Image 1 (cartoon, rainbow, N blue to C red):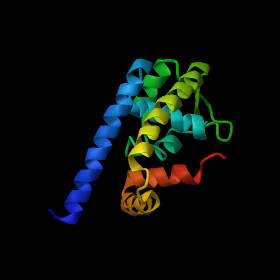
Image 2 (cartoon, rainbow, N blue to C red):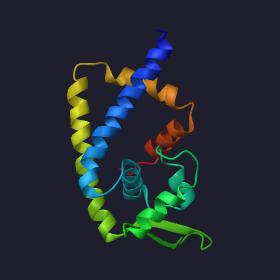
Image 3 (tube, one colour):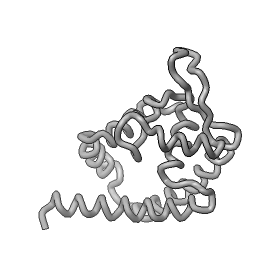
Length: 154
């Protein structure tokens, strides 16, 4: 097997298992991993316009996650308000229910992150992350993650 092929399949295997585990943790909360990502991004970076939200999402490539947001608005988790900086746009933010749910999402994610931490204890994680950032940075989802890291609230 070529190195690039093995790397691709290892990334795919880890992504699938991680998504499966996260979905299982989120199922009792009534949200999918993609919906949870939207809620977390709005929690950590909001309020945001639809385009700005799209630019920070890994689960959606492209800048208009409107169907995903529509579902969360219908569930009462996200609200649309006139953007105070530009009245032509809508600002998306979490409702009180969305804020409460986002705390439970953080707990679910923390459980997964703890399991990952246990699996990689003693491994060269910093070097691995550097390699994965270089690879992911060539693609829209990796660019979205880089933007999210660059704008994290302290």
